[in-house]
Length: 254
Image (cartoon, rainbow, N blue to C red; front, side, top):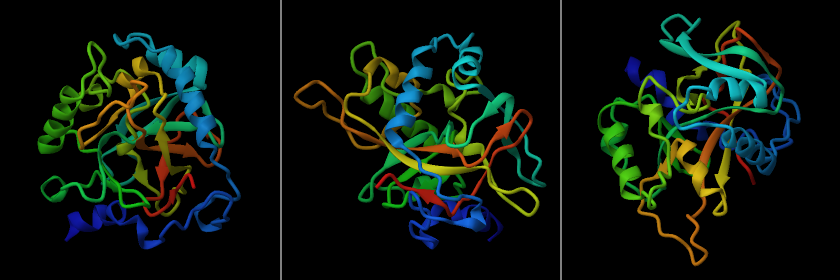
């Protein structure tokens, strides 16, 4: 029962069924008319990813230079919270993308029963899509299998380093963001977005998501759009701050 209590709000954010809509005021979550522009967020993400190196030696410094901040995983300030995500340098402005939620993307008709057992990293979007952010066991094996299945020539179309301690992209740790609690208000919100079909294929290797379904290229040689979830700052986040989300709040892109 305790395990279920720890992640039931991740699995069923429809308790508030799209309660956070673009432009809608949800004062109790600390968000007032905050407009999340998906196109702008994706555009800024591309600028950061263009500076990345697959060897990851300088990616943290490049992100600090272009995005204005860097992230780290450390013991959470929440009692019993395990690992948490902290802003290790710089600052994240309100409305900026601060992390991505990694994992295999499951659409409503895809099987997720066995993957979801005792899995506190299974995140449900407002449209019934699930993202499995667990980096161990069956979830890890499925993600790596899907990446190898959909490999395009010498191009990887998803990041697998988030499954290891050595991240290529510092952004790909959103699954470790803890829920807000008394005295620790939320400073990020989940934002559903779509990686468009014309997203640069050579940058796909930095995106920590892949579809469980086999994907097919369109007539233009592009991969189909892919649902992802980002964590966007709802207020200024400064160096040393831990990121806190609201598990039952999801902002869609409608």
